[in-house]
Image (cartoon, rainbow, N blue to C red; front, side):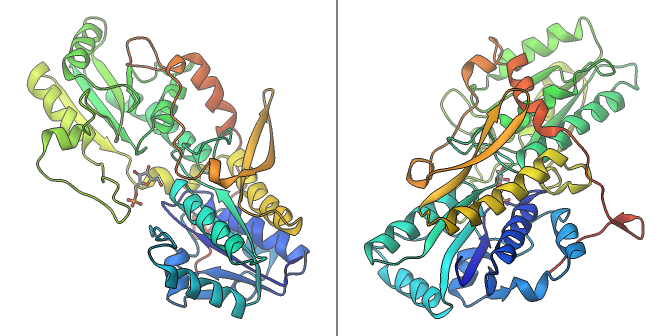
Length: 404
Ligand code: F6P
């Protein structure tokens, strides 16, 4: 096994990203890695010399257990895109010099599409200069939009939260005898996997969400209003789940189409927020009903209090598997999940170049023909991922967290 290893977390956090970190730590300890370094604030922080030795920070089995139930990135995160080596070779020289100084033989990066691009670039550069460091990606994203893998760690817990909140919202909005629409705005920059999880609320004890709108289907206000009017003929209170990433048929984000303000993050990604509020205002004006907008915002990705045990266990497995893959000399790979039957999940690795920068969309056959709901196949795909509740460690009445 590698003498020393290093691990980083990158991109938007999830409720279980630290379970993957715990998996790396536990497996690396088993292989007796001398130092298990953790980049603070991902590659960007590491470039500034920020790292810790996780062996000093997570010492006991109890701490490792609490790390697994701590939401968000324990090591801190970044949204930093490595430049191409042709443009800024000095960044790579600096990184590889530092990795050599620390005697690193494996680097693990826990993240989404952009983080996998980092692993791809590092492993390609490493091969070019004849480095023997193994670079392995560990998937995470509530968006569930990484290619090849059946699903991503973090999605199941966020989906469980979204479905539970939808159920609670259906109860709340049913109290008044007047026409109303409650909009739930759910994250998912490009894809509607997480918004689709609202459909899981429909059950024996819940009517479920009435309309579900994903970014995969161009959103048309008139069609939406017509559907709401039709539903108002048979019921008073509607719950509508909308993705933050809804687009018009011209391909513009809904908020962007209705606003002059353009917000962009460090990756050049548009910052989407306000879709629910926008639709609530339009519906109130056009339909004359009471409306509310609930933006689930960051809570949906940090709601560890309702995390899925399946998700936590699989996130841990992904971290541990990555260390075993490096031990076997794999390089330029991402850990992927394979699904068997209903339901078994196993890990494997896959060439990172085929995954980095790809986006996995909700297939059109899993979306209702009117584009305003999802099919049973989609809820059946998600349901196993939200199963199980962990035994949470509490402190003073609240879930305990491990903080760096
Ligand atoms: O990581 C994915 C994600 O959670 C998206 O669903 C969301 O659009 C984005 O991150 C938000 O990013 P930030 O953490 O920069 O607000």
